[in-house]
Amino acid sequence: MQHRPTAARVPDPGIRALFTREARWQAWLDVEAALARAEAELDMIPADAAVEIANHCRLELLDIENIEAGLAVTGHSLVPLIWELDRILGSEIGGYVHWGATTQNITQTGDILQLREAHRIILGQIGRILTLLAPLATRHADDPCAGRTHGQHAVPATFGYKVGAWIDELCRHVERLEDAEPRVFVAMLGGAAGTLASFGAPGLAVQDGMARHLDLLPMPVPGRTSHDHHAEYAAILAMLAATCRKIADEIYTLMKPEFGEIEEPVPPGTVGSSTMPQKRNPKLSQDIRAAAAQVTTLFPLALDAMRTEHEADGSTSVMIERVLHGSVELVGDILARLVLLFEGIDVKPERMRANLELSGGLIMSERIMLALGEQLGRQRAHDIVYEHAQDAVVQGVAFRELLVSDEEVRRQLSEAELDQLLDPATYIGACGAIARSQAQRALTVAERLESTQS
Image 1 (cartoon, rainbow, N blue to C red):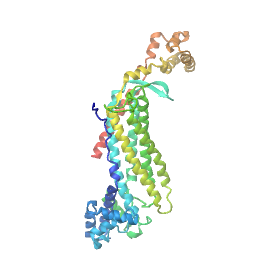
Image 2 (image 1 turned 90 degrees about the vertical axis):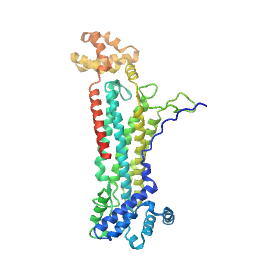
Image 3 (image 1 turned 135 degrees about the vertical axis):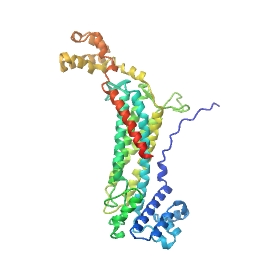
Image 4 (image 1 turned 30 degrees about the horizontal axis):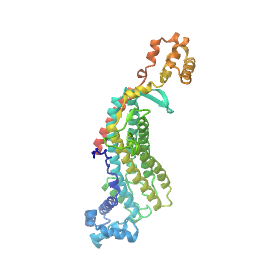
């Protein structure tokens, strides 16, 4: 039996591991440790108790079976964890654990810590994609392709220009993600109803201290009903996913045999169909499109979760958790596939040039119109070119033939001039300059992201 190589696997970006049960428990313990330190600094609990609490807020020191047994009895996500921490600390010190806090203070802040780690991974992935797009835009800055509007040939563009547009959107998403950081990555410690009454006069100072120990900012109003910052982040993720879907849609379309202008990487051994051996399917693009659709569908749930009743409503916290965990995991998958796609994409400039000729010069009708318009006026020139363009399609006659046979056109333009005006490669406007400037921008943003992430 012949052995075939295995197709490349999509690497795991590591986001799902952030939201496992054990990882979340550890994040919640980190918040409990920070809370204890902040309270000790304000003499709310003994300093030695805070040290012991912080030293024991490590999941490997706790008995997981005890926690699971507590979960089975209480049905509460956090209380069994606190019970187990209290047990290993002993009643004297354990009594200071979770002092004044309510469950959502700990779980929401802990989940924000995990979200921040996912955020860093996502920024790193975008940086990697930008480093791949930069040379792609430069290499194909002047390679003409059909610019298409409404699914039809419009005027020539270049493939590098198309890539430049992708870079531009991705860089704006980086700006949005970074701009949202001080609003999204915040610690929330307001007690039972967000009033901080359980902490007494130093309440806001306790939240400030806890946030500082976690390298977060404190919420100005630590209300349990505020989910706008979560919704903002979900919105940015949905927009990022939509951009990735647009890119995948374009590649999916241009990979069709009828276009043949691009092929995403198809590693040796990849099977496209159990019955059709010839199939080279756009698997990466398809997966990106499917995942992006799920992200954008999750976002409206975040808006609904902003409609929280009174001072707390557990249902909306569940909704936000579903949106954020699901969205960041899917976005991580999308970006991992985009990296693979652009590491091995095959661009076919010769096929792009052949497709430019499919309309027999009709794609250059704007340029012909403008050249004639210099002598005849724009509207008269438009009427002439329009008539010949429509006849070329309806009658199946070459566009150039119709132009050459028109005496009014011949008086203004020689055949040599017409041939020069009908060359798509000489009518790409600022495409090359745009592609090169966006390539440089991509490298600049990627380098900055790498320096801030390291």
